[in-house]
Length: 174
Image (tube, rainbow, N blue to C red; front, side):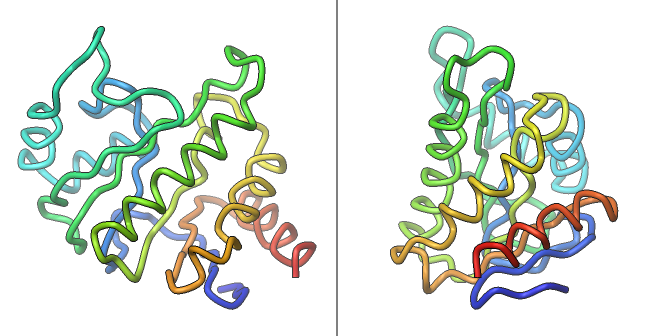
């Protein structure tokens, strides 16, 4: 485990996190999918799908890119799941702005709902194609903002390569 004040990185499955809120790298429909999203939905059970289905849909989306929504966590060891929709890297003219907004919206919801411990994934780094080095820099920059200093944030990353990228970024930003 690599630590930077209130930011941690681990090579673990996010669905095993025992926290106040698990951030889900969701798609705009919020009904599950592949990668982290699918794993969280499977582990949380039907209650999560029901909660997501209850969110009003606008033009086929329950959550826009760069935004986040919160639901109960179902069977997870958390009170909430914060569904954060990051950018599809190749489809946005300025994906950095969208990814920054995604992390901000997720962390703002965590604060609004009284959360202290948050589990985060590498949003948009899977099928959405965000380069992990760039994503790590953006995520850690957002997490270091003073408004989030009282949150304990742990990035749950899969694989030694991804862990190394995030550890290196944390070391650079010390």
